[in-house]
Amino acid sequence: MAVEKVVGGISTVQVDFVDGHFAPNRTWLFNNKDEETIEGIIHEDFGMPFWTELNYELDLMVKDPMKYMDTFIALGPSKIIFHLEGLDTAKTVEFFETLPEIIKSVISFSIAIGINTDPALIEPYIPYIESVQCMGIDNVGYQGQKFDDKVFSQVKKVHALYPEKNIAVDGGVSLENAQQLVEAGATELVIGSALFQNTDPRGTIEAFKKVCNQANTQLAS
Image 1 (cartoon, one colour):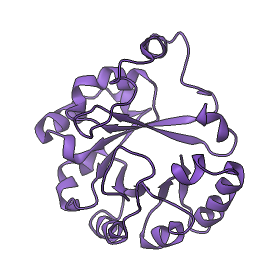
Image 2 (cartoon, rainbow, N blue to C red; image 1 turned 135 degrees about the horizontal axis):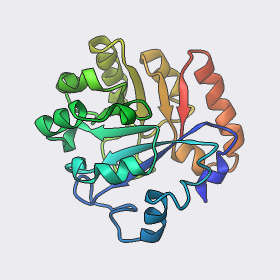
Image 3 (spheres, rainbow, N blue to C red; image 1 turned 180 degrees about the vertical axis):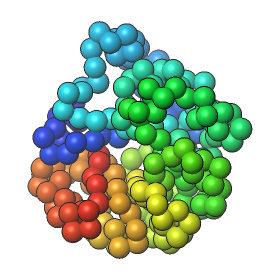
C-alpha cells in the first residue's frame, strides 16, 4: 500500500478520483473495483487507511461532481477539491450555500484550475473556498506527467487576484522546481511521482520539508 510509505512523515494524503469523462482513465469509485471497501468506509465499518494518523484530501477530476457529493463527504475527508472545468457554476454555488454548518466545520474546499485556465473564472467560488490548486501539468488525471513551467506564472496570477487564499500546486512537483514554486506564491505542494517512485521516500520527504519550512509551506502527497 503506497500510503504506508508516508505515514509518520507527512500529515496529509491527496487521493485522486477520475471518472473517465473529465479525463480518459478511471479510478476507484468509477472503475467498478473495491466496491466493498468503499461501502465499508461509507457505513463506518472501517476508515480510510491509517485514518487516525492521516488527513485525506479528495481531488475530484469529475464531470458534475455534485452527483456524488454524499459519497465523497461520507469518506471523511479534511478537504475536497473541485476542478473548475468540470463544474456547473449555479449548481456548485447552490451546493455551497445549502451545505450544513456541521460539514463546513470539518471539511474545507478548494478549486483546482488547469494550466491554461483563466484564474479570474474562480471568482464566483471565492467566498466558499479555502484554497486554489494550480495544476503543474497539462494532461491531468495521470501520474508521471511532464512539469509545465507555465504554472509559475499561473501561481503568480492567482496570488495577485486572491492574496488571502492558500495556493497549492499539484502535478510534476519535484525538488528541482519546489523552491521556485514557493517563491512564486505556492503555500502547499502536492508530491506524487517524486515521492512514490523514489527509492528513498523518507529522505525525499525531509528534503521537501526543508524547502517548505523556509517559507511556511505545507506538504501533501
